[in-house]
Amino acid sequence: MKKLMSANWKMYKTLGQATDTARELAAALGELPADREVLVFPPFTAIAGVAGAFAGRAGFSVGGQDLYPAAEGAFTGEIAPAMLLDLGCTWALTGHSERRHVLGEANEFVGAKTAFALDAGLNVCLCIGETIEERRAGRLEEVLTGHLAAGLADVAKDIGPERLAVAYEPVWAIGTGEVAGPADILAAHAYVRAELEKLLPSHGAEIRILYGGSVKPENTGEIISLDNVGGVLVGGASLQASSFSRIVTA
Ligand code: PEP
Image (tube, rainbow, N blue to C red; front, side):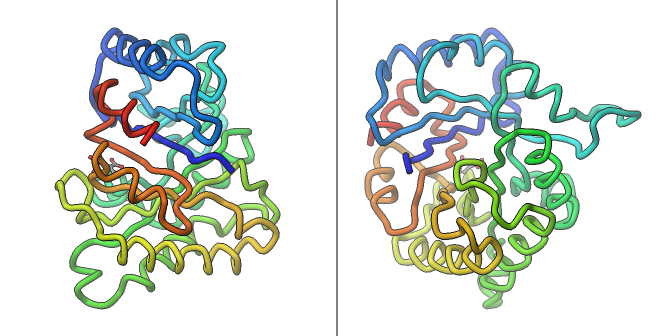
């Protein structure tokens, strides 16, 4: 499968800024390398602009950074999968570490969102990863198993490999400039692969596992060539088209 090169723009960029960056990115990249796909998660208010900038470009997709697991209703401030689809999204993120650790989302809620979004027709990138305290306490595997088991609890066991990605993002490497070393990435991704094969026996071997955490143009080539790395999820270094375009083609 193609490497999924994804950008999380978090709570950055107005509609105009995001649309301009998406246009610059599409222009800088031209036709994508045959083995690459681009996926951008803008803030909700900029989704339509980014989708418009990518319209008609093969291999460019847009996703929502979050969703609420209901079709519609009295959920002030939340967003439904149908609303994301309506704006041109084909993907959604679930379980990003900032939602788990800043906004207090529990594993089970992340699982409800993941299953609901998939059932609604969105592809999902489920984010998982340990804090530095959990790693130091020797709890890496326990945390990854917990995030995966709850995150995928209600997902169809034969979900197609193109519909789901898992992003391994060690919390201590997100936005800190500290990248996990190749040995850490290899070990964590091998563990996630084995868990996916157990939880989703039909396609767990094919589902893409992305790495996220201080990915930059300079370190992408090495990271992307590691076993079981099916792409990247990039925050800070994805905000400029010049930097993210170098990551996509690294
Ligand atoms: C992220 O937000 O998912 C992320 C990996 O951020 P950064 O690349 O800035 O570490």
